[in-house]
Amino acid sequence: MPSRDGANIVSHAGADGRRVLDFAAPVLFQNKEVGTVHLGLFQAPLTAVANLALWLLALLTLVTAAAVAIGTYVMVDRLTPPLRVLRNSLQELAKGHYDYRIASGRRDVFGDIYATFDSTAAALQQRHEALLVSSTKPPTEMKTQITATNEAAAS
Image (cartoon, rainbow, N blue to C red; front, side, top):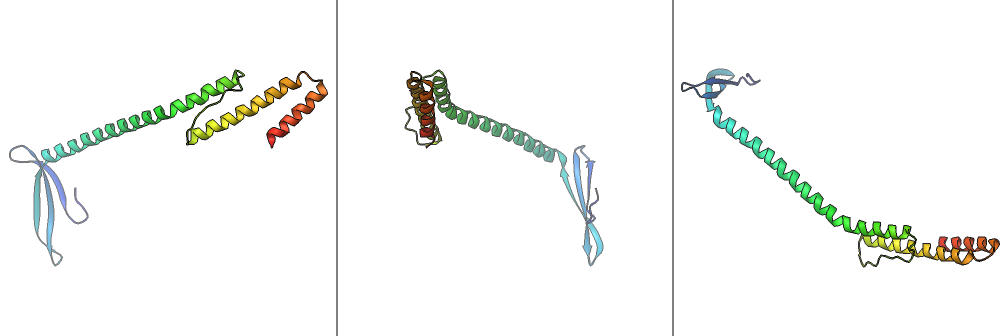
């Protein structure tokens, strides 16, 4: 393989049959070639180091993938219980248990979500109770009661 500066790399078998990489480069003096320098390296150790580097790279890839998998598992394991609490609470609300609340002292995003759930459940409970009271009234009073409840919830 000649390069742009005149160096050549050749692979050939040595006297003992082992493969040798021969690096040849011209020696220049005042832009005249006065000789050539040859450096011979056995290919087997270089190939062994290259193969070792590939195996280590593969091992590093596996270790990294395992670390990512474990980290993902830990994150999901930490996020799943609060989401289950929210899911169960929403199911209770869907069943008509408007008095159901999430009693949590969390001070994170889930605490904010739980507080929002509690205020939503309280508003639904008030509307439900207002509808129950107004269902015993004549239809005109019921419409007025629903409008008043909606306006109160909006403010």
